[in-house]
Length: 121
Image 1 (cartoon, rainbow, N blue to C red):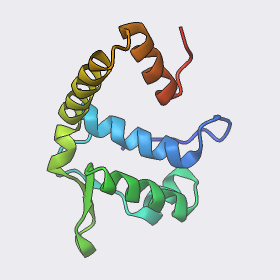
Image 2 (image 1 turned 180 degrees about the vertical axis):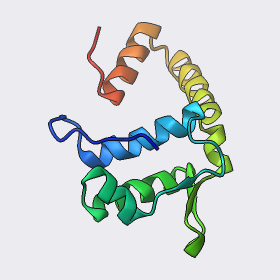
Image 3 (image 1 turned 30 degrees about the vertical axis):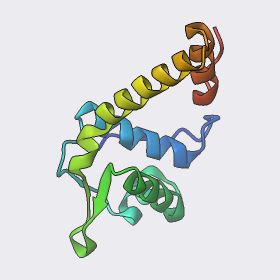
């Protein structure tokens, strides 16, 4: 897995690892069933604390993107393959809700941009 952590980034190492792995799962670069490095192995490879790697794995597991199989290791879960569809479903629900509340589309987009921490356009 080609992943790195930029110590000069304004994004925490934990979030860089979590989002980097999630992006690779969602793009298919890490397919269902792919074995991930151990927490210690990942931490060593990236030059981060083991607790940072463990926290990223915990959040990915809570999101259903990965699963730990005891001594066998950590793998990309089948549920991870459906995360893009889950996000699309959530977006459709959001669009319906904002429409029902009478929030104009541009304001709804502005709310999403703020929630994602993106600059307002």
